[in-house]
Length: 246
Image 1 (cartoon, helix red, strand yellow):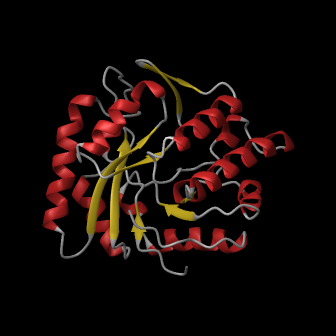
Image 2 (cartoon, helix red, strand yellow):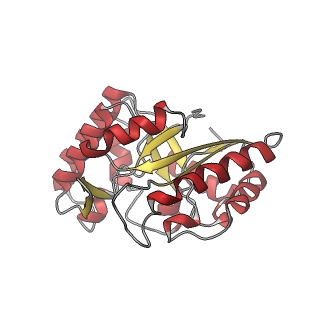
């Protein structure tokens, strides 16, 4: 795929570490050639406050109403949907199902930043905990794709041979559940430890679909040049990016 016209990984300033107005993200994405835009801010949890990481639950209606208004305003230029980037956790599955079944949101993508426990979130202390969360979460069928699936490389402060079995478990589960994996543009442009070359080389051995997410935290992170970086990364690993529709 030589031209990417979608992005479903877009944050807003409500999370506390993104900048710009919601409308500015829309205008920038249109300029970059995006035809289908999904807002997926870090999910707001009832009874959990993480300043600078995610918005608070009382911002839910403002978030949904803002995106709904932009969807209508720009309906002749771009298709806009709204969802969340969310961590799997048994305790919040009913909440997730309610958001989807009530049609308050259109979708969820998985972004396992934290280990989720009742009314609390904590940083992952082991790669095993991360991979187990991913496996359990994908089995629910609630998530359209997994964002930065190889973020666990950061927990290990880099790739080594000990991570290969974990990578294979994730890729096997994605294959079993038909869950696409994301090439994360923010990680590429920021030169983070993900997207990881070794992980995506292993991905070639599995029947997994590959999508692209800008992981936009500022409007100017949408650009044709940014999408080209992801395309080049996929080509380097002989992977094909699909034209993904939600």
